[in-house]
Image (cartoon, rainbow, N blue to C red; front, side, top):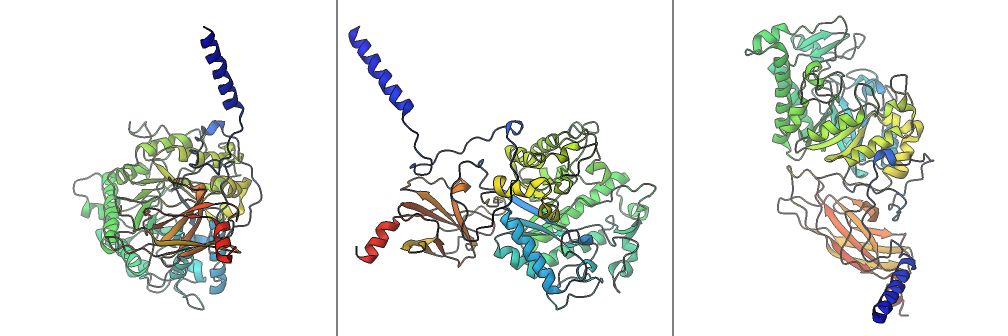
Length: 563
C-alpha cells in the first residue's frame, strides 16, 4: 500500500505541473495547430465593421489566430453590371481614359477586399463592350449605340489585362434574351432587330429574342464562340433571363414558332426544351474552341416549390422551372454547366423563401459541379416590413458563414460592385477585415483538368538588409502542355517537415505571371528561422508539389559579411 500511495502522489505532481505550465505560442510550433472549428452561425459574434486598412501590395498579413479560419479554396466574385450604367462606367460617353481609370479603381477596391474574380456584363441588349463583335457598341459605353470609344480601345481586352494582372479571374457575362432594353432605346443602323425582325417578340417595353427558333439559338451560340475564340476570358456567364419574367397584361406571342417546332410537346415543355437546347449548344460552342473556359449560370434561386414537386424546396415563391422555363436543377445534375450561382437574395427569416432553406436545397442538387451562392448586397440596409433583417449588419456576414459551412458550396458572388463599394452597414469592412482577411485561391475544376503543374526548380534564398529574397526557376510544362500561371509563397516559423499549405493564413504572397519568379519578404524577422514553401498553379488552379527551403537570415547575413 505505501508504494501505491507514493505512486499516486508522484502522478498528481506530474499532472499538476502539466496543467499549470504555460502554453506554447501558436506560430513557432513545429506543426501548426488545426484551424478552430467553425461555430454554428447562430452562435457567432457579429462582425465588427471598422474602417478598411490600406492594402498591402507586396504580401499578405502575417498569421493572426484572432480571425476565424477561412477556406483556402473559395470563389469570391462580384457582378459588374454595365446596363443602365449600374456599376461601370459611371455614366455614358465618358472619355476612354476616365472609363479605364474607373475600372482600375473598381478592381483595386475589390482586390483589397479579398476578391479573386469579377463577372462583367459585356453584352446587355444585343450590343457589345468589345471590339471583335457582330453587334454594335453599347450606348452605355459611348452614349450612342454603334459609336466606338474615343480615343479607341477595346474595353474587353483592357479589362482582361487589368483583371489578370491583379490575379483575378474574368467571367464574361452576357444577357441572352434582350434585343432592346426599352421602347425609348435608339438603335444603331443595321441592328439585329431591324435586320432580322422575324427573330424577335415584343413583350412589355422590350424586344426579346425568340428562343424557340433554332436559328436564333445558333446565332446566340455563335456570339459566345466568337468571344471565346478572340479573347482570353476565364468563363462565360449567363444570368436568370431566359424567357421573361411575367408582365401584367402581357402575352408572349410565340405561337408561330411553337407550331413550327413543337414536336408534340406542350407549349410549356417546348419552351423548357428550347432553353435546354440553348444551354447545350452554348456549352458545346465553348468547349469546341477552348475546353478550359468555364461555363456558368446564375439562375433565380427557386427551381420549384415543394408544393409543385416533392423534389422542390420548402418555399412558396416564383419558380424558375415554371415562370422562366429554366430547368436549372437538370443543368447542374447533368453536368451541362461548370458552375451554378443561384440568386438567393433573401434573408434567413424571409417568410416565403428563407435563405438557409434555399442554400440547403442547392447543396443537395448541385451534382458534381461547383456551387457558388449569389448574394443580394444591394438589399443590405434596405429592409422593409417584409424583410427587416436587411437592416441588421450581421445578416450578410452570417449568410456567408452559413454558405461556407454547407458543402459543396465553394464561394460567393455579390450583386453588385456598386453596393460593395458603398459599404452599407459595413458589409465591405466585414469581408475585408474578417471573412476575407486572408487570400483564397479559386477551386480547381478537376473534370476539366486534374493534372497539376510541375514543381518550381532551384528554390534559393538570400538575406538582404531589406528582408529575405526568394528566387526560383519556372517549372517545365506539365504532361498536358500547361505552364505555370502563378506561384504561391507560404511561410512557416522554424524548421517544418510537414507543411500546412491547406491553411491560407500561411500564404505570404501570390506572384502573378509564369516568369514572376522572385519575391522579397520584407516582413521577415532577422532573428527568426523560416521555412518557405513555393508552389506553382496552372490556369485552372491545380497546385504543384511543394518546393521548400529553410532560411536563417542571421546566419546568412553573418556568412556573407565574414563575421
